[in-house]
Image (cartoon, rainbow, N blue to C red; front, side):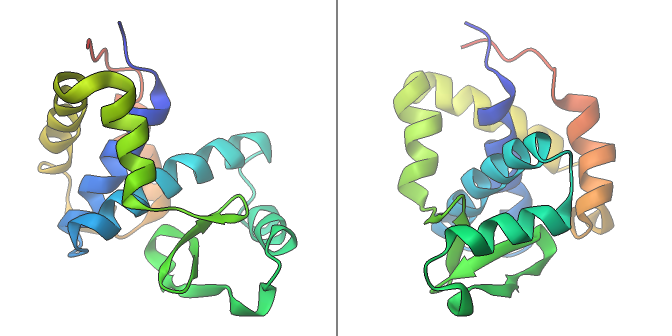
Length: 147
């Protein structure tokens, strides 16, 4: 079975976060949150402003959303964790989408694919959402990953 874009984005973002110094559990939460954010962006025609408005509408505690903690990723944080689509994302959410869905071997293949790409990415691309999208995600989003 070929892996679709969503789990590939989650794995790439996990390894991006790891290279930027985040601990593994938080990197996994960031990975799944970023994949969800990109899916939402696609629906909202790639508007960062509209995305922020949507997140703030979905949050019951709008005043508690923090846009500084994960500023590099342009993600909201709630109590120090990524917040997307009205809920906090966790490492468990990442594992459900990568390992439970594709199995241990499949999850390892997806992560190996992502690791190989991320280790070659210049640091300034990791720190810039637009460069990461254009120079890393777009060229690799349709790479075949067989599980």
